[in-house]
Image 1 (cartoon, rainbow, N blue to C red):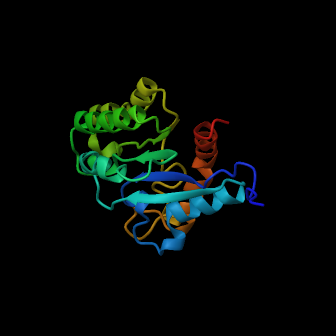
Image 2: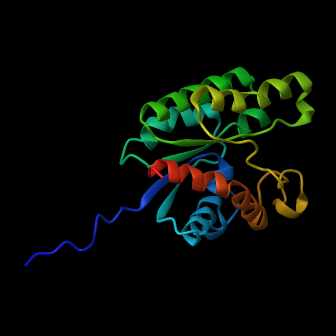
Image 3: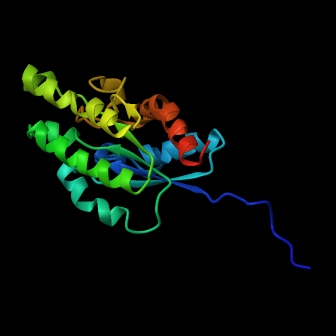
Length: 198
């Protein structure tokens, strides 16, 4: 007699981390990168999830916008972390461009009914007050517009602290990644709970 192997066993969730070098794990071995450490932390909390590294080092919001449909072209992910904008800021690009690109990315993702967590970025004070205010306003305003949860600053507790950064002073080291994951983890678990209808 044929029997089912178990009661409606849920498939492993797919969480796409869509970003730049901070997501990609620049300068670190794979096991110390953001997506690997995040997946391990989520599994330790009982989440059956695979965190897909869709980070591209050097990517701007324009680059992210250009590759979004390709990234989403396969199996639909259950949720997404959107972490882009740092390279726009580092290159001094017009905040209006970053805002427009992130707006289009969020519009595309939400239209596909993919829950998304927006990871914010803060501009360096060296760009001047007007630039900082325009750039920093992008993330909370878009999060509100799309009803998306916002993690205000992806590098919270890590930026400018040499103990948590590689020699370039920009990219987190292994300890920095651990601190980032600790900070963002509650936001990601809520995102996954929403994605699975919890």
